[in-house]
Image (cartoon, rainbow, N blue to C red; front, side, top):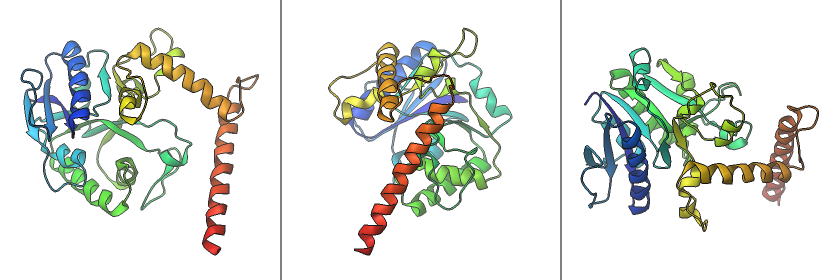
Length: 276
């Protein structure tokens, strides 16, 4: 098929998540091809058009699988995603661009500002690589191969660090997707007006929190919305802020400054330990 979605699931738990995501995809985009790369032998037939082994030799299952997509135009989805709406024309972005991704959230944090070989400006943040649209072309093949090399050289578990470096230095034609195609911060919907956006692809770590020690498994958007609203309140309180007040932007600036002070104190403690 020309257009399709791929998942990469290593282990039974991630296969379970991929199946849940693919079911939501089939319900809203039934005409799109779906392929699964996995190390699991028993995958029930019917949901996936192709079940393929994870290629050997790659630095991660994901980075090894991306170049092996069976589709001409591919949408890669992490397993902790749910499809909320049809996306019939999303692949048409690739008529003009070779690659499309969305910005990550928490962009003032040290985690998301981290780089390796280069230091792009704040206005060029890490992209979230859990939703990636790309086409089959020599330029993309070279890009993905370079990403594997840079990932190994960086020695960092998160592939977004090396991806940001590469994207900054690459000449590849890429597009930044609107946030509704990689909806990380679901509470954005609390601020959107009726015709602002069409929530399309939910991508939330809450979908796999039961694999990280949480008691509850969250499996749909309403449950995730409730959890994220509570988490937002708790995070503001953690930096000593209860409400935005008269200056709505001020709390964000204060939170970033506090995080910077914490990071500086941690660096200072590390220097003292090194001297000792």
